[in-house]
View 1 (tube, rainbow, N blue to C red):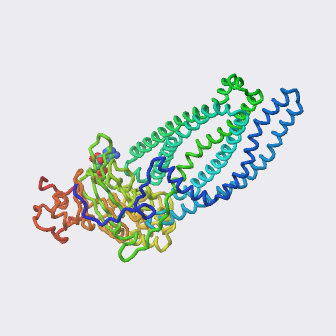
View 2: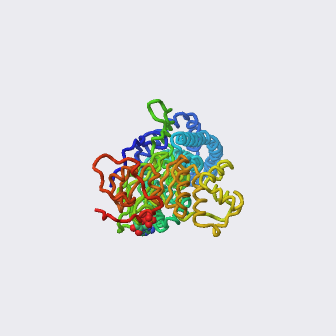
View 3: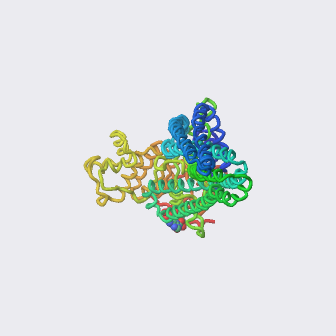
Amino acid sequence: MTPTPPTTSPPRLDPLGKPPEQKSTTEGGALRRVTREGVPFLRARSRAVLRLAGWSLLEFAQTFLTGYAVAQAIDRGFLSGSPTTGLLWLAVAAIATFPAALATRRVFGGLADLVEPLRDGLVRRSVSRALAQALTAPTPATTRSVSQVTHQSEIARDGWAGLVLSLRAFVFTAAGALAGLAALSPRLLLVVLPPLLLGLGLFLATLIPMAARQRAYLGADEAFAAHAGHTASALRDIAATGAGQRTLAGARDLASEQAGAARSLARWAAVRIIALAVCSRLPPLLLLLAAPWLMRHGLTSGALVGAFTYLTQALAPALHALLSVLGTAGGRLVVVLDRFTGRVQLPPAPTADSPPPHSPLAAVAELRAVSFAYGPAARPVLDRLDLTLRPGEHLAVVGPSGSGKSTLAAVLAAVMPPTEGEVRWLGRPTGDAEHTAVRTLLPQQAHVFTGTLRENVCYLRPDADEQEILASVAAMGVQPLMERLGGLDAPVDPQRLSLGERQLIALCRAHLTTAPLLILDEATSHLDPAAEAQAENALAARGGTLVVIAHRLSSAARAQRVLVMDGTHTACGTPAELLAHSELYRDLTGHWSPAPAGPPSTESSTEAPTGLPVGTAPAKTPRT
Ligand SMILES: Nc1ncnc2c1ncn2[C@@H]1O[C@H](COP(=O)(O)OP(=O)(O)OP(=O)(O)O)[C@@H](O)[C@H]1O
């Protein structure tokens, strides 16, 4: 593998323009990060928290009375032959529900003071982050920002509201019930507390592993959605490069990953159900079993019924509500909130010493140790290939038939993922980018559809104005075809166009795009040499990076750099350097003289026989 010439790659930045954050991916780490940012949030809203707690004291009192009044009604009223006293105690319990209902109403009102600021803060943070990202790199805002502003901030808001409500209700209800049990007989706590604490502990122990499964599930879901999105936007390229089976296999792998994550999540959900049963169903059962012992120690019948009332009417519903909210919204809340953690950093203003983020030195595309094989047992087509493409660069790829040129084009265009190594665009993984905005891949089979010439040419730039369209038409030599068809708005019937004319329209479409990376995979193969030269020169002058899988060697002579592929062996350099050092390039171009030992020969020696298709150079000298 011949290394590419040294490049001045910019320091790798994350979307916020800072070195990749060392975020721990464990759930403990996520919980710590969320707590670290959550505590100041709550501290700043301590008055709202105290207001909620104040109203909740009424619920405490109501819960306390629920069991206590029942116990008194039985012991002092009905079992003592005084039904009036019994009814009075029951009336006390009933009346206590009115202030509690009022408290619930006020609690819902006060909830907004804790919930809405969270949503507003998350949206503000996400928008700032997207703006910072847009200032840092010329890629469009990712779908992640849109999802955060809309879907994820709403999940966080609902989850937080549910958590505050149920946690508050549980704390005050449990306190009321436990105080009531202690008031009836402290021994009741000996029976009730152990299973309650055991179940709660078991449930809390599931929180972190379950959040990890939740994260894995969300990750698998996002990966599948991203794959589907990229597939949809690259359907034409996938069909043209025959990458259908591979794309399908990728989707299948991601779907099984998602199914595995869902199964694992379900297993932990089963553990949760056991925990819930231990803390809500076991205490009444133990109370029944311990009843003789408790009554021997002075527990009255009324107190026993009162204790049951606490367990079944107050504690169990509050536990159910809390655990189901913690189990569903709680895990999701931590995972979602963690996506918002971390400060937004605007990129530093460029100074004389530091190049701006859009520095012309930044790589438009990079292959880092990329290998590719069409199957696990297949011979690799690419083997640890490194390649860096800078803005405005014009690279030609040449090599014998079957040497992997089209495979390279598809991998570089992220139509097929590499088996090993990484492809990056604009300094970031290709998965982070809107593919059609970064690269345009033109395969040999030009795609022209039934519609007007304008629609065909503007397919990738619907916003192009008349002047831009006519400039592209002129630059690409499409004018005669346009006049013959009857103008830009004349209908085009693809069946009535020659293969070369179809390629011209597709090339014109590519010329009009603003994608910084343009890859032509023998996209000029049906043009005559003069038309091909005009098209390639115009595309090179367009301003972006141009990669041409060369059909004729004249393409290589026009490029600034040439990549020669020969199986998994590659050589890269200027045409002059390759003539001096690459035997295969000399073979392909028909220069058979032995390699000079001295410095690379000059550009003037690269007189490739134009018009000769790549790979058909006469093999007069057997290659060693
Ligand atoms: N879909 C595929 N499945 C399996 N093997 C493939 C597939 N496509 C290409 N190959 C193999 O990969 C190797 C490289 O093929 P590729 O099409 O990239 O070469 P190329 O240099 O572009 O050839 P040409 O100049 O003839 O277009 C060849 O050996 C080819 O047989």
